[in-house]
Structures are given as C-alpha cells and as structure tokens.
Length: 150
Image 1 (cartoon, helix red, strand yellow):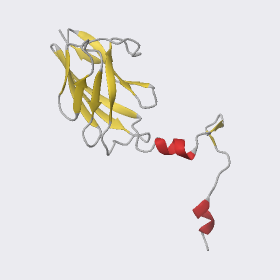
Image 2 (cartoon, helix red, strand yellow):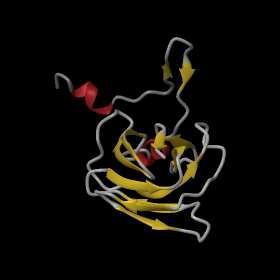
Image 3 (cartoon, one colour):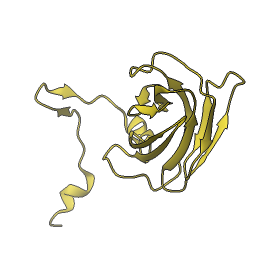
Image 4 (tube, helix red, strand yellow):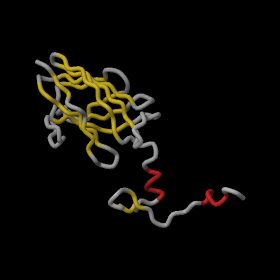
C-alpha cells in the first residue's frame, strides 16, 4: 500500500500566490477550461494597402493548441480594442477560414486549422489596426499592431 494515500488526494481549500488568493472554482468550472485557447502569438507583414497576419493560438500553459479553434473577431483602430472599425476586406492568407458576418465589414467568424493556426490578409487604406478576438469567457484578446502601409 505504499503510495496509496496519493491516489485520492483531496483538498478542502487552496490558495495561490503571495497574496494568498483562494481558488474558488469548482471541478466542473476547471474542466470547462481544459483545451481552451488562452492567448496567441501574432506575426505581421506590412505592405502597401495590406497587412498579412499569422496567429498561433495557445492554451493556458502557453503551448500551441492541438485542436482547431473557432470564434469571432473584429478590427479596431485603437490598441485597447474599444472601437469597431471596418476594413475593405479580410481574406484567408494561409491556415484556417474566415467568414464576414455583416455588410459593414466590421465582424468576422473564424476557424483555425487543425493545430490552432490562422492566417489572414487585411486590405484597407494606410492605417494601424488591431485584431480583437472575443475569448469564450467574454474577455477581449488583442493582437499586436497590424500596419497597413500607403
């Protein structure tokens, strides 16, 4: 029976960090976050009238996803993501799929490839843009600046 006591370790209360923040999530809530994207890396290639953008979605541990990711995004002219701005067009560059959701060119649905990669090309007038992804938790996750040259 050596080591048997570890097979059913139960904790009544758990605290993390130097400020002793108590973890209050239930097991069911923690399981909902399993295999959910938490962040992404952004690589941009500015050009005249366009910007090519590659995203690699990552889980909470910072590991590249091993499953597809889908959701919605919009464009913003500010780094906070607090404006919704249009673009002449957004099209798939490589990896994944995008579908425009409105006639005003202000909202898109996306699906990555099988391993969490999405590549798009933004076509618009010269400007700085940020891609704002709506995380499944409702939070906004904002890309690095995407520069469209004149």
